[in-house]
Image (cartoon, rainbow, N blue to C red; front, side):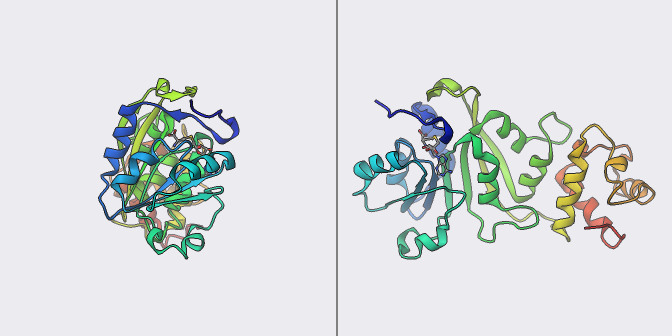
Length: 276
Ligand code: SAH
């Protein structure tokens, strides 16, 4: 029997063998990988990770679950359980005394959906401040709607500021769908497995903060043309010829620009007196 669930911690126990296997496969683990798992819950995914990786560090907020996990997996030599909030705890400091577990290079997790955004930022950083020690890969089971946004192409319905922000920092691959029925209790939404592979974006933004601000402004009103939404940062008399020189439609909206185009626009605006 799975233990009772706490709603405030977004607890939904994955019970589908198939989904568990797809998550593990997507991580492509080797015997030298050190894995960070967020929210091990009852340890169903953890048990599959442990035989495949050099080490698994799991961060779980729920004290009762931690007790249970410690009882069941506490003796496993390559397992380290940390009780706390993944958004708060200082992993580097906590792992300082555990050389075997330091600097995990991969993340594999069925995360609590209510804190997806903050978890993504914690793992990837932001355009202006990318994680200085990027993970080799991050495999997450998340809400389908968010997965769609992460992997969206320009001009599609799901493409938005989150798509640009995350795709600037990582390659995003959609691995598979996971129906709500794969969980106990089933969440209200369907899910997807996504793999994020952090890499430097080429060409890079010369001024990442400016790019961040332009994206924010541009998507603040999706329906409007950039020459209107970006007006507070750059006058349309400058912007329109610039868009044309970049072979972009002067009537383009934020959702029409690929990540490359966002970067090109930001870089072209450097030195044009843009507030940033
Ligand atoms: N991986 C498990 C459980 C997923 S549910 C499974 O696949 O069955 C999400 C898990 O994240 C729960 O165990 C929940 O207690 C934990 N959690 C929620 N908020 C957290 C936080 N801020 N930090 C760490 N863990 C958290």
